[in-house]
Length: 427
Image (cartoon, rainbow, N blue to C red; front, side, top):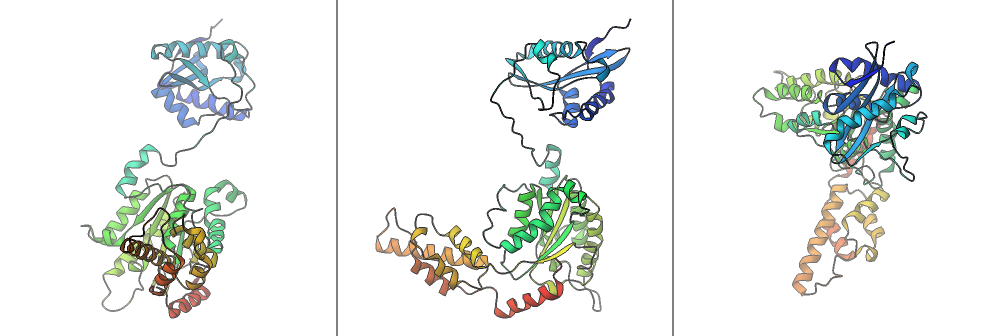
């Protein structure tokens, strides 16, 4: 009668490990560690297998972190359970890891796990009052090189929540972009195709870049900003550099790609002789369909002058949505002002008056006025020799700064924006 023996893992055992891992999932016991982690530990850390009639029927995989050892995977084929094979695998794995000088060996198990005899027989004790928390790192190590070459980065969490006011825009972007991309399984259930490309348009300084960054932060995807002005100096020319940039972006697992002032490279074509930019526009129009074929990607193009974009650029099939980003409403202006007023003086500032006086101001205009007020208040306090721990700008300082600030967006531009919403927006 053939005996079951325990031996070290061999690279040829990969298929058997895959089969054991899938069998565990089918039995409604979701492994704590993903398949890629288990296979990586098999080859880089410590693993033993149980063999019966030259067939792998069980495996135990472990890894060490300083003096702490972890059981990454333990499974026995269903037809061989109840024969003590799991306990033998654990004992063999512990022996193999003994030279590491571990102080303890631990294991995390899903709540649905029921076969625990192997652990108790090997002296493992259940620990009460413990919770398991996990966070997936959004960018894996093999992506970092490509991300660095592109000048991309992972933005800090919380940028989305940091956008005060602008609730209509936030709600729309949440429903149309964030939810389908973040919850692809739910989108598929309802037949929703996650967006691949969008245009944000609106007057200068209204926060289009802020929204693009916040979307990347919300999704926890890599953020890559493409600067046409920088690409123009490439020896291969702007069109060639643009093509190479998007080829590198294809190496990223997830990415929000942002092109600001896209009108610089997507202008209306026409005229005799053709302008040099027409070749760049043609290249970009060819890039977008290829980009759309790649999953987990979002291209965000922003423009202050949507009327100047080539008509083919906004055609259905290239961009899923064309979304207006207008001037901040009163709630948004309240939030913006509160962000720039020092916390210790904020209770004494009549913010409602500042909000009323800055109707028609862009977020950039408000930031400028707030900083101008702070600088003026500091200079006046120093000149008067009246600086104390409680010193800071007063409401009058802000009102004076507002009066000296000219709004970026004129009435004509604001009216044109409303017309563009009616004729070009696609929500």
